[in-house]
Length: 448
Image (cartoon, rainbow, N blue to C red; front, side):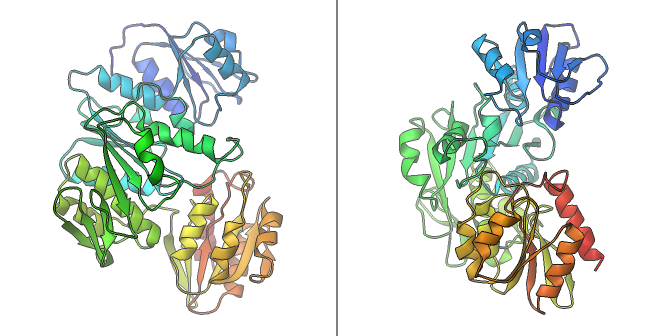
């Protein structure tokens, strides 16, 4: 059900017809707008004027607004021309927010960003709030596109937001927002880390007194600058897995603890949290802080943490073959994610890595791998760069396909070892997306 009636309204534009763009077209059509859309590929949609090839920005100059897909940068020539002309260039998440604000009782929004862990935290928060009895919709950068989530009775929208999405959000206000961590990523789109961080900080734009900002206290790039950036009156809730944190949610002495108020309230023993790994302790702390801030009980939060099995393609157990355990971490598309994944194991491992680099500095992988790497199996366009990083650390072999990579990884491993697919790269040189890459890995493992 769309937010408004089917009466004919004005003209809206949609740039990019991927998952979010197609959902936007359907929503706008159902809301009574005349829709004109553009994609580089030829796409046919009933009732929509679709252009392909070079973007004809003149056809969008009379739009009420243009919804921009996250894969298209705002520096694109046509997009920049629309912005200069004064056309609001926003995105589907912003439009969803505006529809909600038009309701008599607007829904709340919980928003999550960061370099790593976004999808896990977003899913956890959605599960926690739904289990607490709130009418909740969860999606955005993961799962369903934002405008597929619209329901008249939704009480809370839980949205994963990428830096690309945050660039095109103007009025959006998150009642609770989290910035999980920051490490270099998408350096093919940002000139430096500061510009990338600036895009991430935008998640706190428009917050008001009483809203909640959840920030990683263990990240030296985030916590020290938080007081200077956040609006006065916003409640800052830190999370930590390294130290007690009065005013926050943290891990200490084997427990996840809520210390936002005057007293410490134990939530759950960390050994009972189903998703494993150091990074998942941080994810659990962040998700707990967000869900508690919107009214979930400690018991509900603990129950979800005990039962949530984790996401597909993120440190996902696949199979044990001849004593060698295979894990699918295809969602590990940047160096920071892979460093955390490597740190989750205390036994030797064979790493399958490579793909299309995003102007990435891989050097941090060397120290992380030196502690436990038995061998590296390299694939894709970045294989040469990765070989330079791992040279002298462990044996290196090359593979031309995922089936070959899996076969070679088993040959390199010994009983008790782990084989970890954690590529540190995008997938588009060899696969449709990271899901396709992870699925092909799992199929190859089951084919051994």
